[in-house]
Length: 461
Image (cartoon, rainbow, N blue to C red; front, side, top):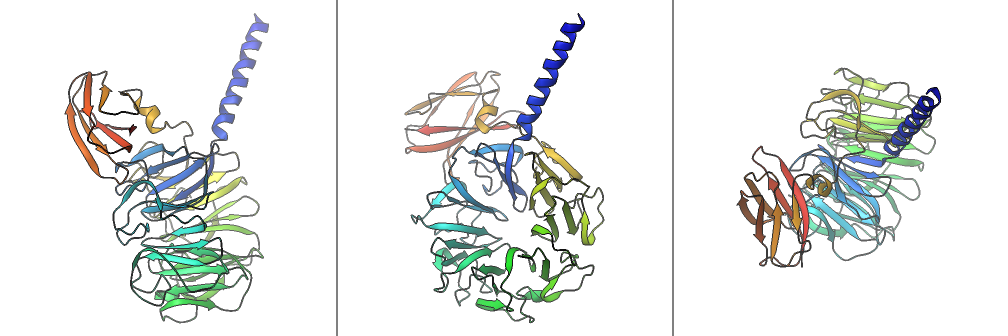
């Protein structure tokens, strides 16, 4: 009996370890926007959660998600940038993709229409890096050229004008651009391959870092240093890390986001403390997250909803350590929430949760980091528990199996986020006539009597 009991306990322990191992190896990277988040799992699939009013999640709907949902099974994503209400990505073949809000043409497709699923922008195959901001976009091609599009009221595109553009345009003729950041409202920051720092756009509170408050509409070098490595931008505040691991900041400091222990603006890049082991830094709105080379997590700035993860709502004017763990490896800052990744593949979030942006299945804000489940269901997996559709692909008539037989509202959305069909059903099995639809991918939103909405993808052939 003891031997059998010991055997059972051993098997149970092994299963627990195996189960935890599966969960632990879930998340690979995370990025956050205003109130939404996108993350890659270790299998390369793309997931999203949070605010979705303008299709910024890319799941074909405009419904907020409080838990991660599958956005794409494609495994060829090479670069991702999450903006305030839109996103940009580059695939391994060099093509450019975008989705979300485009009020100023910031997605780059020539219109101001929101995109509800990842959509290719143009036909070029030499895109390298992108930076999605609030209302303007910056990008670098493989030849080192700089490109921009979107809002341009303060010259933030850098083309010498204040005229907005809805498609990518080249900025100057230089071919040595290395890093760009359009995370701000009206200004842009960049690094060249020689390590020099550049800025342009609105110069409110010294955002451009040139010692003045004068705006400019073309890139200009900041100082003469040649060892800039990492840049992060928000509103009119900027932070950067040099190759020697030192941390620097300049611009607006209303909420202590510059981390220098004061609320005084800085018109030029100024070192924060004396440490030389800063590895990464992220700012959005007025709070900052940072990582050190030893795997420790730090935060400072605004903290109205617990976005610093300290357990309180008290802001901080200088970097403070978040716990004592030394296995943090990735960070992301949303408007009033934060996300951080550990070396074991677990993902944690803290702060505002008004749109489900913490990904924990609720809309309750939190002042400390909590774990985002790795076992969240994909859109199609979730829907199969309640509804079935067939055939898929479909030619003329799509059958919807509704086990409960309750009244449901049906809405068909195309890849541009446009409603193309709308109908009600109140039977356990009903047919939806789709013969008038053009060929392509569609999203069937099914809203039940209790207000729950499920989304199922189908292909019209």
